[in-house]
Length: 342
Image (cartoon, one colour):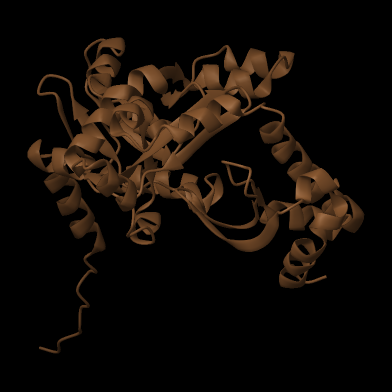
């Protein structure tokens, strides 16, 4: 079954796959759902007695359907049952109650956080207030809950801001102030991150116990969701510099979920083009395209407390000119010699 036909089939038949008490008075629709990480096709269920609108991502389910048709349809039904069941049984009562209080800004401001988005997503979200820092784009979210099972959050739109009667500047200031409490970040060595991913593998543990060729660190939050934003929270850049012994450092935006920090002295012999190539390679082979934050390397000057693009720093420090001259000289073809008869 083709994708569009599958979506239509789910919409038309999902009610027959669910208990009657769940579907009474309910309407199902399939529509594009916009998130900060991209757009997905969602099965939306609207029911008069539900404050929250359950939405199931159908894109991933369709992939499973192609492998096992029966399992794919059953999974949609089970996901709806679980989600709606939690709401009807009070399992999401705290979130429902909290959402109902968001009409007043004094309540909403307590759960505001900042999330990064790609430039492409920013262009596709004209109805969402955005802030730009050195070419990186950020939005504000209302975070209703965050635990080991995931994060429940909603993007703040222009309509929210207008109904609250708050300026974009105040909105972002309040959200940034909440970051350390609501989405605390952590700087970990690359070795620690890899150890967590690999688990108890004696061979790999032995390999990781040695010195890495390039000391690298990863900054993200506890949920590892939208973690790159935490790097920009008040005081965080200085705190990272302190942990690195007061040294300057480069920051590579690995994705919207984390960023990589490398001490400046480690990259003394690395040119701007090489840094960009490193980021581009990661974006091309590792990072989900919808979660690419940028392909630009950045620099933090610990003494001047200055964050800027690596290119701007290298130009100020006289490092960029030398590199450009070198590349220019290497790319000039040798003049052709012609034989002259005398």
